[in-house]
Image (cartoon, rainbow, N blue to C red; front, side, top):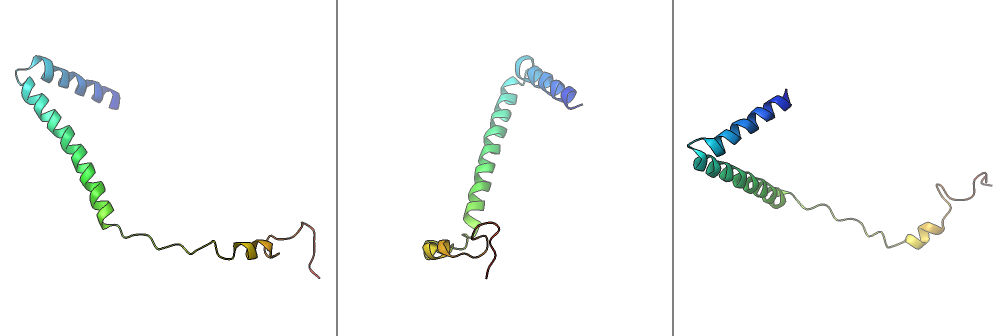
Length: 84
Protein backbone atom coordinates (compact mmCIF):
# COMPACT_ATOMS: atom_id res chain seq x y z
CA UNK A 1 0.00 0.00 0.00
CA UNK A 2 2.81 2.41 0.88
CA UNK A 3 4.65 1.43 -2.31
CA UNK A 4 1.60 2.15 -4.47
CA UNK A 5 0.98 5.47 -2.71
CA UNK A 6 4.57 6.61 -3.09
CA UNK A 7 4.61 5.67 -6.78
CA UNK A 8 1.35 7.55 -7.38
CA UNK A 9 2.73 10.55 -5.49
CA UNK A 10 5.90 10.51 -7.58
CA UNK A 11 3.86 10.27 -10.78
CA UNK A 12 1.65 13.20 -9.72
CA UNK A 13 4.69 15.28 -8.77
CA UNK A 14 6.33 14.43 -12.11
CA UNK A 15 3.22 15.58 -13.95
CA UNK A 16 2.97 18.78 -11.88
CA UNK A 17 6.63 19.71 -12.40
CA UNK A 18 7.18 18.73 -16.03
CA UNK A 19 3.82 18.65 -17.78
CA UNK A 20 1.44 21.04 -16.04
CA UNK A 21 1.10 24.77 -16.64
CA UNK A 22 1.81 25.35 -12.91
CA UNK A 23 5.33 23.92 -13.02
CA UNK A 24 7.06 27.07 -11.77
CA UNK A 25 4.61 27.48 -8.89
CA UNK A 26 4.99 23.79 -7.90
CA UNK A 27 8.80 24.10 -7.84
CA UNK A 28 8.60 27.29 -5.78
CA UNK A 29 6.20 25.77 -3.25
CA UNK A 30 8.29 22.58 -3.01
CA UNK A 31 11.51 24.52 -2.43
CA UNK A 32 9.85 26.73 0.18
CA UNK A 33 8.43 23.71 2.02
CA UNK A 34 11.83 21.96 2.06
CA UNK A 35 13.70 25.03 3.35
CA UNK A 36 10.99 25.80 5.89
CA UNK A 37 11.09 22.22 7.22
CA UNK A 38 14.86 22.40 7.72
CA UNK A 39 14.61 25.78 9.45
CA UNK A 40 11.84 24.54 11.76
CA UNK A 41 14.05 21.61 12.78
CA UNK A 42 16.99 23.98 13.42
CA UNK A 43 14.73 26.26 15.48
CA UNK A 44 13.49 23.29 17.52
CA UNK A 45 17.07 22.19 18.23
CA UNK A 46 17.99 25.73 19.28
CA UNK A 47 14.97 26.00 21.56
CA UNK A 48 15.79 22.65 23.14
CA UNK A 49 19.40 23.69 23.74
CA UNK A 50 18.32 27.02 25.23
CA UNK A 51 15.69 25.64 27.60
CA UNK A 52 17.31 22.41 28.80
CA UNK A 53 18.91 22.87 32.23
CA UNK A 54 22.58 21.91 32.51
CA UNK A 55 23.33 18.51 34.01
CA UNK A 56 24.34 18.21 37.66
CA UNK A 57 28.11 18.30 38.14
CA UNK A 58 29.82 14.96 38.62
CA UNK A 59 31.77 14.21 41.77
CA UNK A 60 35.53 14.31 41.52
CA UNK A 61 36.45 10.67 41.07
CA UNK A 62 40.20 11.29 40.94
CA UNK A 63 40.37 11.66 44.74
CA UNK A 64 40.84 8.38 46.56
CA UNK A 65 41.20 6.11 43.55
CA UNK A 66 44.47 4.71 44.87
CA UNK A 67 43.00 3.98 48.29
CA UNK A 68 39.86 2.28 47.01
CA UNK A 69 41.76 0.18 44.52
CA UNK A 70 43.96 -1.42 47.18
CA UNK A 71 41.16 -2.36 49.56
CA UNK A 72 39.71 -5.85 49.51
CA UNK A 73 36.02 -5.26 49.77
CA UNK A 74 33.23 -6.24 47.48
CA UNK A 75 34.73 -8.18 44.62
CA UNK A 76 38.22 -8.04 46.11
CA UNK A 77 40.50 -10.96 46.84
CA UNK A 78 40.95 -14.29 45.16
CA UNK A 79 38.11 -16.61 44.35
CA UNK A 80 37.62 -19.23 47.00
CA UNK A 81 39.23 -17.25 49.83
CA UNK A 82 37.32 -16.94 53.07
CA UNK A 83 37.68 -14.20 55.65
CA UNK A 84 39.06 -15.16 59.08
